Length: 249
Image (cartoon, rainbow, N blue to C red; front, side, top):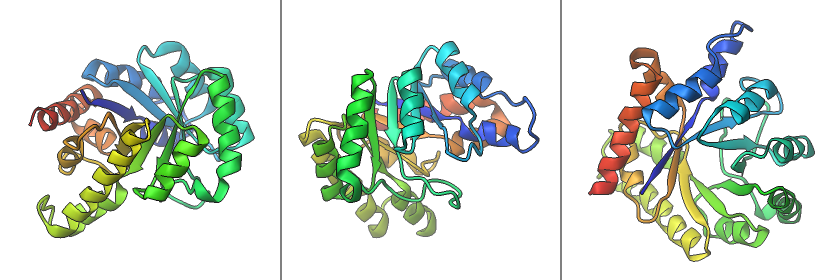
């Protein structure tokens, strides 16, 4: 079985463009749930560019599916996570000047500190995920710090897919897909859960969804974009159908 986590950050982006009260990310989460989402993902950034603290608190209180809190490994964010207790906290790199997360977390460069963060979250009963590039050394480091989930950065695959004619069978696309597959194999061999996400959309998602042992995909921008035209519930349902089709093959 493969699960779909829907990232609703960009519903909040639209709201923050006018500094008003709509569209409401919590309403989007409910619609995503009704469309078949298995979880809701939000990234509470240090600069609060989209999701706000009150959004996370209301989501924790009002949603009935898993809440995945993307966060930088800072004392402030760890304290918020330990208070709100999402089902999963995903540690990601974060830069003030990036438009979106641009790469995986470099666990090797900060292994001791991240091990402490993972331990604090585990003590609060929170499953910790790490967002990493498809590199064996990062998988090994994730296991050493005690992460229970690795989300493999699928952005390189998605960008090659887009730039090489949208051809899932082209050699460059297959090479990037193979990197994700091998990372997933290593993740599972280390006893961790294999997830993936970033830049996946309705055209490139199925080869990733069909990879052996993949447990969950986190998708946001493509679903929110489609929702502008068909509604959140239908946009999520369409994506969920694609995932099920890929797994059925």
